Image (tube, rainbow over all chains, first blue to last red; front, side, top):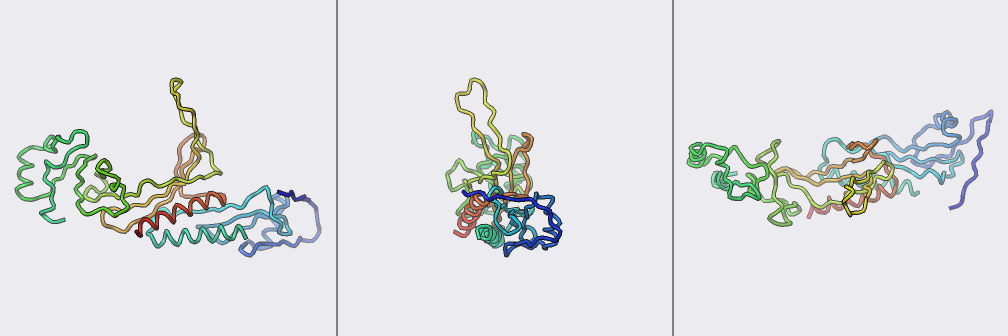
Length: 100
Length: 173
């Protein structure tokens, strides 16, 4: 795996943040969080119960040291079959997004 | 269940002691009267090989493995068998702490480590709709915890999808 050199810089203008299509975090929030994540951007997909997160540099280059994660809230109540099938499809869609 | 399906109390025995009748915990006169009235017994051995639920099991129920795979009587719903698919693989939750087995010094079995796991279940109570449950089992600070919030890598998630797909396929026959 090739490594990507990262640079932490101070700038007077907010940087341009490149998000994947599925990221729902507003750019202003990403900018505000940069100092908390050592200049990296944490992208999040839509709300629970199945969320995808992935970190990248501001230009959208994926951080190779921080793999994408899925955050899944399984229902407290058991799922009927149709619901379980739909749940599996949603998880698979999130995996495909992570790979995109 | 019809009156003709009512199990005679004396049919309800305990595995390993199949000759042990339920009358051991009832007055014989009470049992006789129940039988004369075709009233279902109200006592069952918890580990009965003859469950009061006489309806057929779904094709995927663990009882398909043979006579030793009997339903226990669950006090939460004693008259309905809980059907469960077995075996179902557990899957890896790689971002959580696992646990090493405790072994005696005399034990020649090598030590092993179990990862944190996602457990998936296919169950059906009586003749109700089959259901799927998922939870996470892990060992923060060495203590066993189950929860419903999962944090998974892509590889972990692909394993979970494979098992969920298997459960749904089995349930649909």
